[in-house]
Image: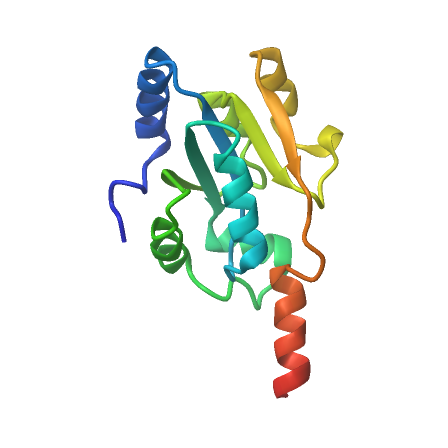
Amino acid sequence: MSQIKVQSLNNLKRIRARLRREGKSVVFTNGCFDLIHGGHIHLFKKAKSSGDVLIVALNTDASIRKLKGPARPVFPLKERFEVLSAIEDVDYLTSFAEETPQKIIGAILPDVLVKGGDWKVDQVVGRKEVEAAGGRVVIVPFLKGRSSTTIIKKILKNFS
């Protein structure tokens, strides 16, 4: 796992300040990223193409259980960090235990806030803060059938 990519919120705030001074645009997205698939890679590529540096925040294991139920996550946070660290388009990783990434978004105020197509712009957490700071929200179209839940259901159907 790349220790350089995985950062605390305090470190990300310092990194963000440096990037701002350098005139680089920061893109942010978040999610469980529990079972990495082509839909996630599509999201990361589109997100990265919206700016210079991509920060990805992952839900902790406990927050995924609250959102998705006791059978999730499939992979623990440490392993999800390891997998995402290997993805070239991802520059920095962090995690959050809260229900939403509101605290992280408010702290770093990315230039671009990216979510998958299963979200509507007015539902995106942090939208108001990002737009008030001059940033924008980008919704990346959802790829049909490419969700962790759909993949898990297919596996269970085909192998049970």
